[in-house]
Length: 379
Image (tube, rainbow, N blue to C red; front, side, top):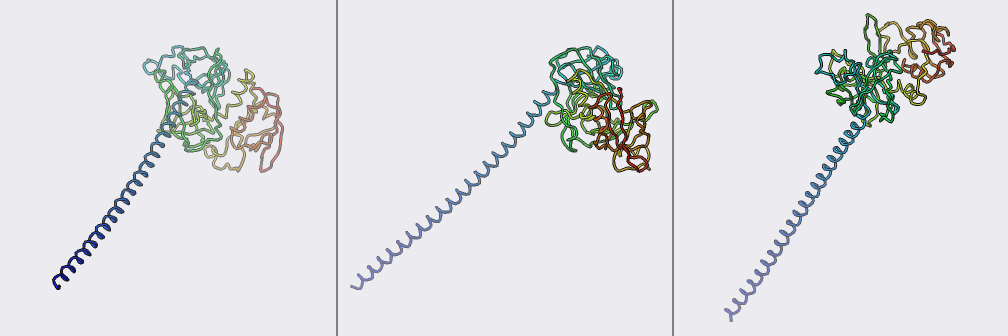
C-alpha cells in the first residue's frame, strides 16, 4: 500500500514537471516569435526608408538632368540668333590666319529684328554708314550696313538684306541680381570657334571703368561685371540669363586680371531697337550734355559731393542744353519729372524722344533748384 502511494506521487510529480516544461517551451517560442517579428518589421521599415531615400535621390537627379536639358535647349535656341561680324569678307579667317583679330575686325552680333537688324559693339561694326560683313548661323555671309552707332556707349545696329530672321529674346537688365548665373556667347578667337559658350555669375552691377584713348580719358558707366570668360572676338555677343533672355552685350575685358569682364546693359538700347523694328529708322534726338553719376566722382574730383542727380561734366556748343542755359558743374536732378541717378537714365529717356520735343530739366546750381525748358536737337 505504501509502495503504491509512492509510485502515484512520482507519476503526479512527473506530470507536473512535464506541464511546466511544456509551458516554458511555449513561452520561449512565443518570445522568440515576437523578437523575430519585431526584427522583421524594423528591417522592412529600414528598407522602406532606404527606398524613399533612393527615390528622392533619383528625383533630384532627374531634376538636375531636366535643368541641364533646359539650359542646353536654351543655348541652342539663342545660338540661332548669334552672328559673326567682320570688316573683311573672308569670314573664315581666325587664329589660323596671318592677320590678327584687330585687323580683321572679327566680332559677334545679335539678331534683334526679323527684318535684318543686328546689334553689336560700335568698335566691331564701325561708324554709321560704314560697311561690314555678317555671317549667320547657317554659314551664309551678307553685306551689312551700319544704320546706327553710338561710340559713347559702344553700341551699333547693322542691317542686312534678309527677312524672317530668328530674333533673340531681350530681358530686363534693371532686374539683374549679383550672383545670378549668366552665359556669354561669341566668336572668341575667330570663326573656327564660333558661338563658343562660357558661363559665370554677375559679379557686380552699375560699374564704371576709365579708358585712356589718344591721350584722352573716357568713361563707360552702368556696366554689368561678370566672371564669364570672354576674349576680343566675343565683343558684340550676348550675355544671357538662365531664362534665355539677353540682358547685356559683351564689350570689355580687363586684360590685367582674370575673370573680370563687362557687358553693356540691354535696356540702354531697347528704345533704339524698338524704333528700328517699328519705323525702320531711328531719328535720334540729343540734349548735348555729358554727365557723371556719383560712382565716377572719385575719378574726377574728390571734393565734388552731391546726394542725388548727375553732374554735368561738359555741354556741347550750340546744343539744346547750351541754348537752354545748362552749365558745366550743374547737377541734373530730373527730366520731365523722372529722377536721374545715372547718365544711363538720361540717355535712355532721350532715346524715347524725337528732335524738336521739349523737355523740362530740374537743375541744382549753387545749392538752388531751378527748372528750365530745352528743345531737343537732331544728332
